[in-house]
Length: 362
Ligand code: ATP
Image: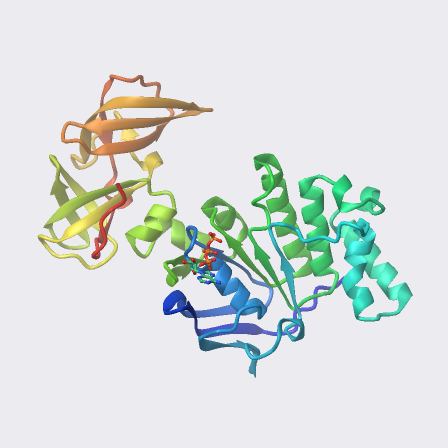
C-alpha cells in the first residue's frame, strides 16, 4: 500500500453546526496539509465529534464550507469524499472473519479478486494480524478488533482518515501500545489523519498539531510544544496540565508582572495583555512548584502538606497555604502530611492570563 494522499491541503472555512439554535460548533477555520496528523481535543461536549462528522459528511454544515484543494466537498455525500473512518466501537461485521472484514470495502468496489487478496493480505500484515486472519471479531481482544477497524479503513487507501476516540474502549496498557501503532502506521503510510480525543496526553504524544475546542469554539491551534509552553488562555492551560490556577490581582504591570492576593505576592509572566488592578488567573504546573527550593526572586509560598500520594519516583502532593490556596505539587522530595514547606516558583513558569468573564473551576 502506498497511502495515496490525493490533495495538498484540506481547508475548513468558517465551519459551523447548530442544533435547534444551539451552536455545537462555531466558525472553525483549519487547514490540514497532506500527511499531517491533527488532533481535535477538548472536554466532553466541546464539539469534537460534531467537527469530525461534518468533515465525514455524516452531518450537514449550517455555516461555512470545506475544501480539498480548490474543490468544494461539503456538498458531497460521505461515500464520495473518499475518507476512511475509525470509531471507538469498531463497528466490525460480527459474522465476517478478520480477512472478510478488511476485504469488504474492496469487494464493494468490485476490484479484481487477485488485487483484493493482495491488498487485504498487505493490510493484515501492516497491523500484524497474520495469525488471526481467519478468526471472527468475537474471538479477538479489544486491541485486535481495533486493529481490524484500522486496517479496514486504510486498505481503501483513503485520502484522509478520521478517527473518533478509537482507543477509548481499551485498557490503559493497550491504549499506550495502540498509540504507537497508529503513529507508526501514520508515518509509514503518510496518511493524513484527523483524530478526536479528550485525552490531552494522547493528543500531545500523537499529533503534529492540535486543535483545542471548548464550547464549540477553537481556543488554540498549535504544535504540542506551542500548546505545552504557550497556552493561549487559562482554559487551554487548564486542559494542558496547569493544575494550579490561582485567582489573583495585578499589582505591577508589564511583561514581567507582579500578582498578589490571598496573602501571596509573586513575580510572573504575562501571557495576555493585563493592567494593574486586573483580576487574572496565574497558572503553574505541579512539576514547576519546587518544595524547599532556593527562593527565586522571593517567589515563595508557605504551605502545609495535606495529602501525599506515592507515584513511582515522585510524590503528588497537595498543600494548602495559610490563606487557603490549594497547591498541587509534583516532587521527588520525601514529605509527609502535616509538614510545613516553602514552595518556590520561577517567574517564567507562572503564567498570567486575563481572567475573562468566567469564574475559575472550584
Ligand atoms: P464527547 O467527547 O462527549 O463525545 P464532543 O466534544 O464530541 O463530546 P459533540 O458530540 O460534538 O461533543 O457535541 C457538541 C454539542 O452539541 C453538545 O452540547 C451536544 O449536546 C450537542 N449535540 C451533538 N449532537 C447533537 C444532536 N444530534 N442534537 C442536538 N444536540 C447535539
